Amino acid sequence: MKKHFFLLLFVTCAAFAQTPKTGSELVAEGKAKVKVKPDVVTLKVDVRKRNDVEAEALKALNTETTALKQYLVKSGVPDKAIKIAEYSVSSNDRYNSSAPEKKSYTASASLTIEMQLDNKLLDMVYTELQSGKYQDVSVNYTTGLSEELQKATSVKLLEKAIADARANADNMAKALGVNISGVKSISKSGNNERYYRGSKSYEYVSRSPRYMDGTVLGNTELTEKEVEEEVTIIYEISK
Image 1 (cartoon, rainbow, N blue to C red):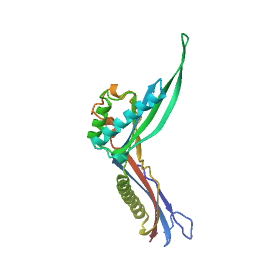
Image 2 (cartoon, rainbow, N blue to C red):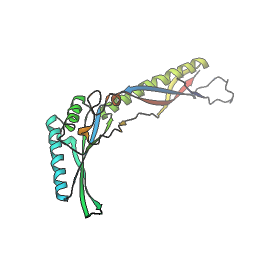
Image 3 (cartoon, rainbow, N blue to C red):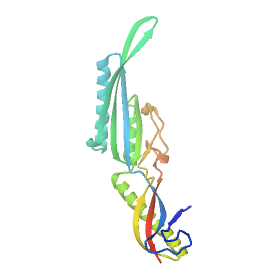
Image 4 (cartoon, rainbow, N blue to C red):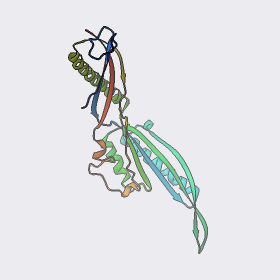
């Protein structure tokens, strides 16, 4: 890993080789990387129903979304973790030269489920969606880090980055023949990514093939992700 060091010596004479005096500074950078696996998932299940009668399309939509929510709750998903929203109804004009113009209607809604990442439960949900009970359903997902895991990861990264900066500073101080007498400031700028978004969309889930591990996410989506942190520390040095 390439490391960059910066030495700022504020002395009476501007020559670099001059011996540092009290009040001089040494600036060192530290970096840290850790691997972390997502522990939360948000599933978005879109349901669409089409009918020549608007009221019938809405009725079919409500029946299916209600049935799906009841199944989720029965399977162990907390009721408060399930939200049904994005209701909409659109009309579709159909033209046929041998028949009068006719309208059809598409009613749609989305179920959003925010939960701890549990492969067994996800497998149950996906199996249910494949059962043939639900039609015109698609699924998208987002995996990420819970607030608790974010905090723990940030603490670990910061500790490792500070230790790396101190090691770099010690090496520089030894080469210059000076002592580190204190810390003046610490600043950080990391790439601690929180969310890992999935792009798979399952149109007509009940007819879609299962993934190798039997879950909606698949093995490759649950691999550890590398996040990093960088710190810049200004140390006080003296002879």
